[in-house]
Length: 226
Image (cartoon, rainbow, N blue to C red; front, top):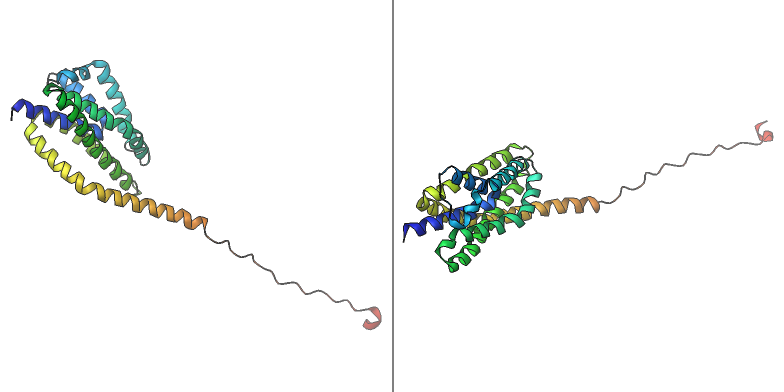
């Protein structure tokens, strides 16, 4: 296969996958690398090097950096971004692979959306399960690890395309194996929560405490007392 095609496929997969985990870090990383001359973006993604887009993505990444490390808030953030990361990943993947041809662009959008969805739901589901832990350190570790993986993954997809494609195939196999387990774990968790609240609402009220009647005092007539 043409090395240029391999590079385009790797960058397409990398951008879609990373967008499903942290869209803003992905765009900011691509823009910064392009502005420093470290990479050459595909023609249809040159707009990501715009300083305005880099600053906007950097600001949103700053917000997500803190929101992603607060238990509960991170899950709410992930729920909202289900409708942002997946479409954005599909669009970016389509634009990245557009130089190959219009058919490849459609395929890139479909597969890019699927890859972004897989990485997004894996991240979001893992966070829901991690939030059951009373300490916050697991969230911090996961969040920082995700940031490092996203930035490193985007760079690797552009600098070492063959190795990245191999790693991505392994990641897809991991998703296929892991997502059903995450789904069962979340289902079990919410089942326990629902059972807890049903048990509280159905608990019978304690019977009222009855007090024994006090004996009445009998007053004898005066004649009887004499």
